[in-house]
Length: 335
Image (tube, rainbow, N blue to C red):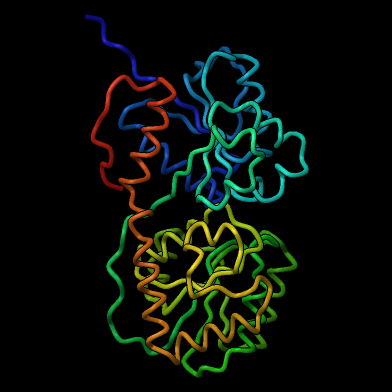
């Protein structure tokens, strides 16, 4: 009997490895998961090319930034399935006012959201095609050694959507003597980089460490007392997953994308842009061990959502339902 070649999947990611951001991490992780049953390539753009075989499935990350690739593939291969992954700014901004992002919603065979609160952002007529796949990270053993300082990390490149200025302002407002605020991420916005340098000079408890390799950043996070995420919009933040699966509680801006990750009843929210409220939350997490324990317990309850095996099973089930995979398999095969 002739052996059937495994299906070819192309993942279109607007960011590649050098960017080291959420889109790239999603693309790299999904490629690893899919390679257990498919051939996979990652590209920044897809276009018809006689030198490159057309994939059996196109997975496009971000409705606006990957719109050209999705449209070109649908035009060239209208009978082949496509998946659009709504990763953040496209879900909470672009699909409401950008015609190319709206066209991507209509063109995709299936839509993927990274947390369940985002479904409310979709037009009612496309919700039946939506699937929720939570992202994942391998768990790390929680840090148990004594800490000299109570370090609060913010991890994310310095750009407006992440609102790093709120974290910087909070550094001057925190009262707890043990508090140290660590900021990890490259300056995608030069003005925010200058603000970080000025804040570091004026506020001794605040340090900007710049961009770090992902593994190094996660080990630094693992040793922290808590992690702050100040974003104005998030599709489903990888840093929340990495904190939760390391036993580090999260102090999160009160936005839909963070609710979808942490739950509506989570005790660690603060109003977006409110540096005073964030500083109070940091102080309370340090001064009140019972409150800190509550945050840790609530995060631990969400951790099973972010297990690699859960994410891979959901992804392969989606691809299977699109008709590409002829049989089931054991899903997660390590990192």
